[in-house]
Length: 159
Image 1 (cartoon, rainbow, N blue to C red):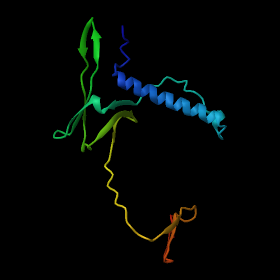
Image 2 (tube, helix red, strand yellow):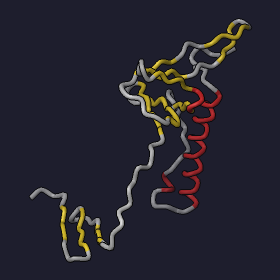
Image 3 (cartoon, one colour):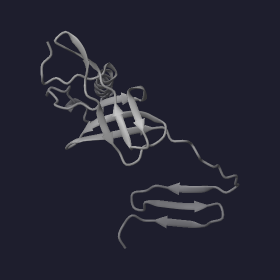
Image 4 (cartoon, rainbow, N blue to C red):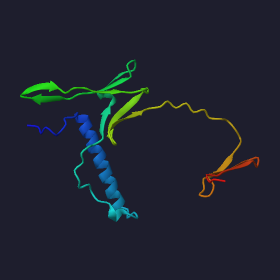
């Protein structure tokens, strides 16, 4: 028998939460092993979280670009010995990008939808003999000079 407080989510979403936790845990152990500056202060989570970021892969979502609607998949649940479907989660969005890879439900003062997508690579390489040297410093944001002696200093301070 399921508790009423526990939401039922897809197996992929459960794997997503577990993978995020294990990744963070492994990073913590690597930090301790490498003796980083604050690695002794790092501890495993001990508080019970109310909300976990839940991910949905492209296989678990339905997209309707005309209605600006993203529908997240719903898992089967068993109620009184019968299999029933949970109600769908519908998300109304302003714009929907192409090539969606993953969608994540994030809780930050309310539920937010984080969409991860693949963007096409439209870089154009310029064929040139010119070279430039750039210094990203603390005093000036950018200092640059090219092979003709032209220079520019961009500062981030108020003048």
